[in-house]
Image (tube, rainbow, N blue to C red; front, side):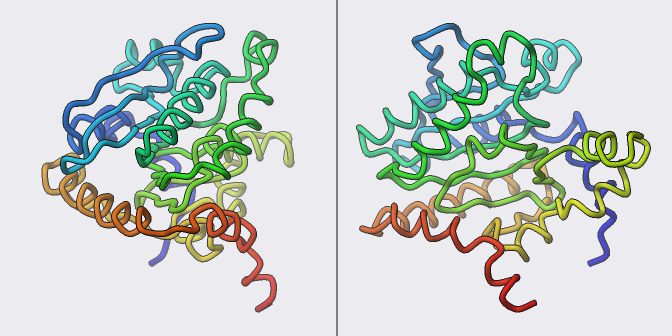
Length: 263
């Protein structure tokens, strides 16, 4: 398939794409939202709680952008503060305590880089998530549903399985940010996007993800039913695996290695 990477970036940012809450409302039953990191505040950019997936209890965490201008402002445009990541980690550790699988929906251009976020330990919060997620004793599945930007996305993506929607993107930096650094001109964003290997096809070829999810019937009942079925099947298999932590570690150690060896 011929892919124009920057067109994928635009599709990933479309305000009409389903957001994290749309997936939660249409895939799970009985969602109960939990709030706060028990240290500073509640971050509306990250929504999390417990729900049922085909009758089984799970912990669900989503980075939420919102659709309208008002919603996006309220959610800080999907740019989490450190308290958001600490809330997510609190819920993941709680899930581990009670033996619930964890499902994350990711859609962010990156963690919020404001002064307050840095003062409250943004880098440390992300680093703690990366470290703690490697040792969670329950199945973890992360799905990139729109943008997957930098450490802000990776902080919820150290999982046993990482999936991407067909028109989502996953990158160490935004094309505009990359262009501003390398060419001192953000108008080179399309060129940067072509070199960042940020499409779902690129990520799968590099071993960064396991599955590309079709966007056929996106937003319709059939779309959500298909994802629900895939999640149920995958979690059933992962729950029977007695060696999740070792395999999760090996999964990340393998990324990119096979490609380098072949070349």
